[in-house]
Length: 172
Image (cartoon, rainbow, N blue to C red; front, top):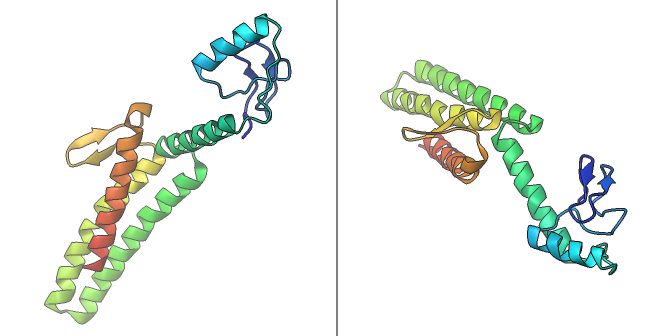
């Protein structure tokens, strides 16, 4: 993984260009913990060589950081693909309700009418998934979870519950 912006090395304070993940001045990784930065600063000041170019542990951390950044961008509405998915999912929910209504009109049976009323409730999880993908406040019961970093896990859990509820409502 490479940095998507110009960044300063935490060890030697060298400015590195985007597209790199190793400092060009001291060979330190861009994905160091604060403890590792302090250790490498001491090594750098003492003139010891630092070489993180082949260290697999930093690459694993880099992928974890990349996934967390992706999950945050989706939850905050900053991912264009997720925004389009959320919008289309909402429209799909509306189309399902319209088809269910037409189905109830054509058959004019009590079972079809019940299915239509159940399908109306499927719009709630569809709207919540749309709100999640657009970076708007989502709700679990009456508790609102705005799109902030602190709510990342609960928002993803809420979307999972919404998708489960939507699936159950469609299969009834």
